[in-house]
Length: 170
Image (tube, rainbow, N blue to C red; front, side, top):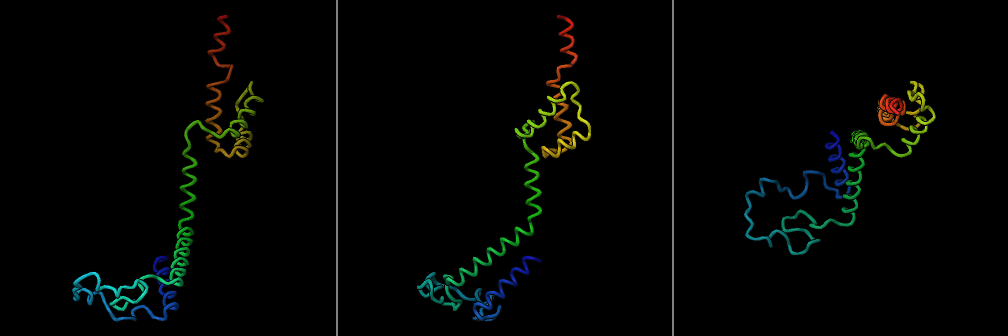
């Protein structure tokens, strides 16, 4: 529907520019062209690129006004397409940002999480309120916060059974 409206607007702009409504002009139709046989390419135009061609269709090279109008229409169509697909573009951008490589959180985010970890190193299990605050500070989702703490405890918590066994052996 938007494409039809854009074409209609384009026709209206061309009509106001040329003073000729769609369908008017030389009276030539597609079926008329099929009946004619052209001997060589030179008969298709009168030799000047800015004049009227031999079939009477008008200038072969657009005038400055026509170029300006075409540029204006191009920009309008681009704007309309952007508006029409803006939501889709935002969704794709968000999906790309979500699909960062695993384990590669931004440095400032990990600093915030590590600061909490260090201040609670004896019992590094954040409450739901702590997780909500951390999610708000870091911009991460609750699931990411949970996973980060699970991984951090597996890698770095010094009260693991393996370290306690080592200390008992020594």
